[in-house]
Image (tube, rainbow, N blue to C red; front, side):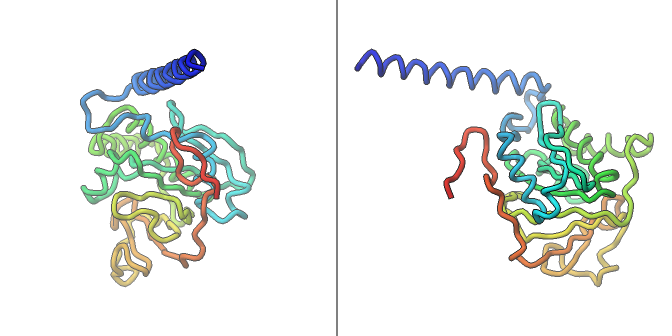
Length: 250
């Protein structure tokens, strides 16, 4: 019995050591900037099946069931399921906030737990998704928010990024999202990409309130946020599980 328990214990220790080495190599292989404010890159990652479930929770099933699904890998977002309705669903990380006009929002790039599921419509898939993927790439290379914003601006000037068009849409209905400390999942809402819109054009509604408002107003990244009924929130089957967690039984 003692020999069997010792052997089992050694196997567990060996597996944990291997897991630690894999994560260490993962962060190094991704070119993660040592000494930066970023936590380990592995903390931004998810188990594939959990990320797929979370990405699909961004929109009603009639949309997400036929959408292309992308998940984050060490080399950026990759297609894991090809759809046929023109929508693309994925889980954005904090790097999506790098071009925000609010400094406090830009610091969300360092919040490794941020999970923002979104389903882009066909127009947003063509014009907004490339921006999100570039910001992710730059963030994974260890660039801070100011450098990411600078590189994004340069990409637009060079014509390497498509200009945002009005009107494009994104569903953000997930009940399992984490939009930053103090926000959690917030309300299910629609993102309407309205470049250069001002909040005054909607009546000057309070940002973060129950009425539609413009985020990053007056910029090429201005988005009109339209909260919807909380009963429309979509629960992901596996939620926001991290690689070290076990699926819930409910």
